[in-house]
Amino acid sequence: MFDYPVILTPDDGTMLVTFPDVPEAITFGADTDEALMYAVDALESALSFYVDDRKPLPIPSKPKRGQKTVRPSALECAKLGVYQAMMEQGIRKSELARRLGWHMPQVDRLFDLKHASKLDQIEAAARVLGKHIEVSVS
Image 1 (cartoon, helix red, strand yellow):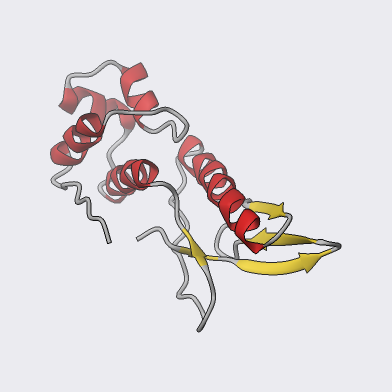
Image 2 (cartoon, rainbow, N blue to C red):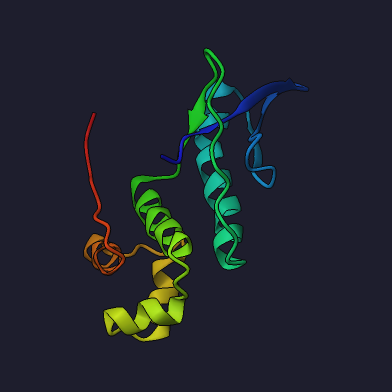
């Protein structure tokens, strides 16, 4: 759902990573593996700007044959899914707080991609939006 294609470009002895769909996300590493590892953090940081500014999340384009993709961690994907559902339904954070019976700081933490929210909190938010969280290991 949040698999974003990356462009890997050799750059003066390092590997530069950019995201065509998320221009704010840029990073590099000593080699491809390190660059892709750092790309997760760059992507999460950039997507947090969209959440903070209450903007729709960028839609990942289809990767070209052989093109690598990067996605946020599982917890962040769950948070982003709830955020996206909230945006699609035109629900503000204050309405989500009311539906959940939470205080606003709790809802703010839910959408803070650097905060280690509990999965049951994310599930509760998804539920009041008519959604559910699916977890799989593949």
